[in-house]
Amino acid sequence: MGLPKRFYKDVATVTDGEGGWRVTLDGKTMRTPAKGDFIVPAKPLADAIAEEWRAQGEHIQPESMPLTKLVNSAVDGARGREDLVLEDILGHAASDLLFYRADAPDGLVSRQTQYWDPVLAWARQDLCAPFVLGEGVMAIDQPPASLERLRAHVTDLDAFGLTALHVMTTLSGSALLALAVALGRLTPEQAWKAAHVDEDWQIGQWGEDAEAQARRERRWRDFAAAARMLKLLKD
Image 1 (spheres, one colour):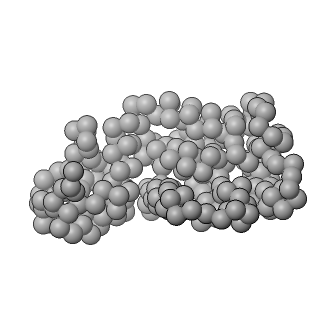
Image 2 (cartoon, rainbow, N blue to C red):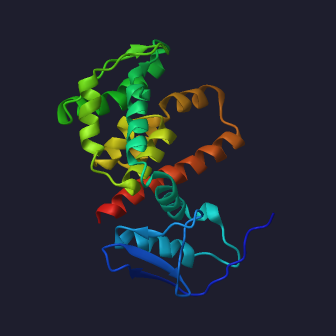
């Protein structure tokens, strides 16, 4: 099935009169796939989405519009279900990537320490949330108080912010890395590199195939877009 043809000429952003912003195509308000109101709470985000639509050529390329995809997910999937999204993020935090360490080889152990320990120190010192580390894949029970302190830093996020944080968490395998980006402790690039310490070690030993590289690039695009949406919501 081919890509849909571009069916509009003009793209604009307009206020909904209640503090939200709409994107219009030839004066017609956009809707989500589930026919929801495509309204965002920040003008910078609306403007960035409008640019995604202006940049389309003869055919619409959905993969080139990650912000549009995120807003669709927020409106159709997260709105009205914010508590469930929040609990899923905290569920990831309870078994965060950063807690599970290799015992060998020394090079991998050193890289995990280099990239992960500063984030855990930040969580302990700035968020008052210490965590327990372990080797291997056996489940580790984390202090409930630490998980509750993480909750306190995300509980005020709306459906849009939670969607972005959830995407970053699932793509990286780490709620702590996602939160570090959201709170300005790490750049998206730094968090992404930290999330791939193990994978990069394996690539250094065995090489990387083209399919795996393309998949990682797609995932990075979505991770970066989610981080950008969080920033645009604050601007």
